[in-house]
Length: 225
Image (cartoon, rainbow, N blue to C red; front, top):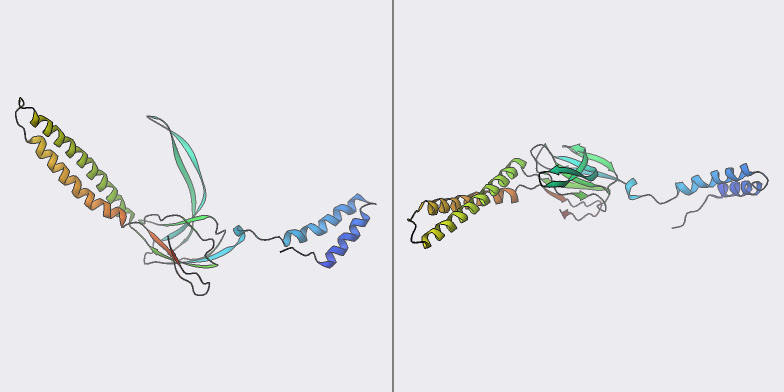
């Protein structure tokens, strides 16, 4: 929608512009009168908006973080140079969380002491009043799940290798029969499978879930992240 310059300011600017032909300083005066009015009526940026955020959760350790910047860095490794991601963030609030934030266009995430960090999300296009329902996951249990799964995969690979060695030696009749490889292989496969059965659910069910709760005042229907 086109902006309108107030008539009083316009008349003053026109008079000053006529005088500018006789005095260059008058032209600067005319521009100084018009420019502030134009800037004041320009459309606001989404970064200038504010959003009120409330968090609903049973955990007192839940915090809302904002990602302020991110980049990449190079590190030296045994195999050459590697690239690592660098993320800078700041805490916006901790439970009980009811805060008004500027610039909803940036990325946010939920984390805290002993809590698995959530996926990133933005507060843009969710209204001026946002309620977040947070179901936090345990970072300790998820770490245990990763360790258990990796150990299970390693044991399964070891067991499979031992079974292949046993099968190849059984085909060679000149070698004495030795059931050690078979026993170790079977035991490793069973143990590895059991560790993976324990670890995979710990990883899957200990993520932090964030949901935009429905808000009758703003018409927000809610959304799962």
